[in-house]
Length: 163
Picture 1 (spheres, rainbow, N blue to C red):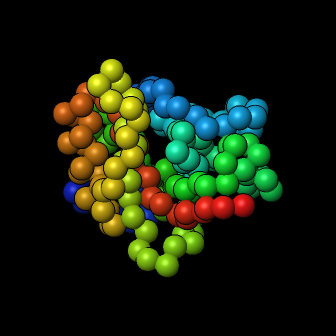
Picture 2: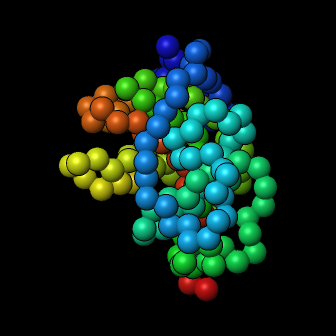
């Protein structure tokens, strides 16, 4: 078991054995871009991933590689938030933590969000969770335990709007 409250920026950790975490989330991708990419709740990739969020969902993970030139063509919108996937929590327990890797484009301290998959009682949720580790991890563990759903902990890197 991870000592979640001792985790800090730059830390990485993985459960042993690494469980298979699955949850379906709506995707805004309207082309075949990222069709072979790890899904949002996949914990098997070793590199810290990025993903994109729009008003209609979140993309699979961009693990290695560059963003395409015309992102709006793939997502059907030019309004997008760019996140760094930092952790996955399932059954109220940290499953995987990736180290901070990507630079932020924000003028304020990067903030963490929790992504909760939809279920019969709610749509997909993206909830604010604070500015520094370990607090977002702790919040994700409690939320996952209460809802019985996995939770992704993500760090907001950039918000874009317009063409």
